[in-house]
Image (tube, rainbow, N blue to C red; front, top):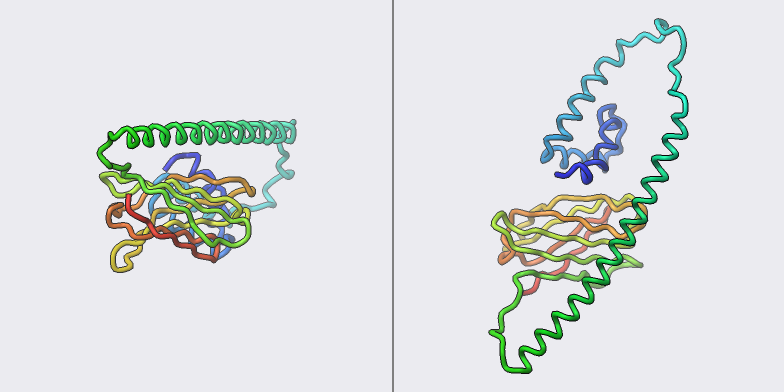
Length: 224
């Protein structure tokens, strides 16, 4: 689990250690902690601080602690830098999307030329591309699935979900077997791209689903 993807979860560790995290977010955080050793270690360190808090005696302090000078300005500068970086990432993502569309068009033209000229062996990419249909409002969900030795790698795309909604992804195999692929949180009304994985072979995957908040959406996974 990368530090960037864990950062959103670590924002909730303090509230969890104090027992102040809402039930829905608490369940999702506990599921994440089970598979993330770094977040689990940080939670254990916070738990030690929480146990010592009742021992603190306010009467022993001469005065209330004061924040460092210029702290407000440094926080504002950090927020501004984060916003600039976010805008740059958005522009870069848009440029990559246009480049990807151009590459896809060129690839389609090349494939068409091969078949028109009588070449080609009729093979296809092992990837699976899935688009969720009949979604409410402005919600858009899509996925690209890639086979690997460990199972299936999932590139999930979500747009138009409520800000802060927890998105939990799963694959459905034969006989309705449900295999979790992890989760991510939709932020700030922007596009969300997440890379997840599930221990289910793509050739045995019949459908992909995602819980967005309290709603669940599924889409069939067709042949390669």
